[in-house]
Image (tube, rainbow, N blue to C red; front, side, top):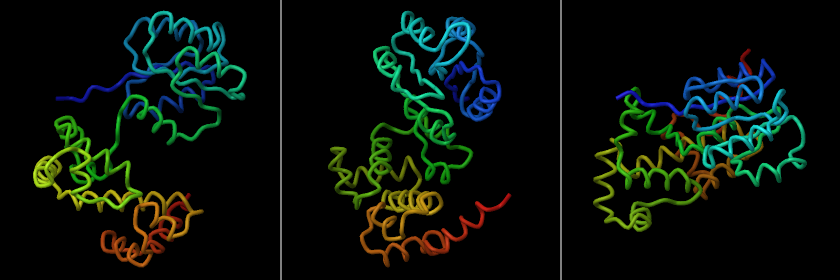
Length: 255
């Protein structure tokens, strides 16, 4: 079965930003666009929308007016406000109209995508994507609630030492049952998934957080012994943390 994409409506009058946002989001979402408030509100009333990206300074009908009209017809659709100005002057009015987020321009594309997925309840599991490949979305739709809760707990608690028993206790499940369930649905042993999740988070820190020392990254993934962390990382990647960081720095310097 083909996965149904959520629909996002972008109401923004800056043509270059509108195009860039469309290109950024259209890989994972259905994207609709409008360049002024009246057009945007008309489009909102025509189609079913999951989330609206709404600029505060748009012509014909400004963002606050559009927000008020949207909320008069739909109290629950998700809305993120965008602005090139300080949020202080209008944030209170938006908060009263149930806005889920604010973005001050210029904003980071990765953070915007992550924020949208968070608001829509869409989670990304890079370890499972690596394991499942092309079957990722199909298999993710079929995964059971206990297995998904286990995965979410692991991903959200990478800064702690994680064991099968503590995870089973949190889920109120028998440890042996949890292990069998996880292996059957995810295709990997529970402890191996925990290790892979910590490695994935370590890679992220090493390649983006150059302000963090190796020992800080080790602590951030729940490993207190820096020497053990280096051995653990190399066993899974073939590189020490320092070698991986050096490589990622070299790659990021390419034109």
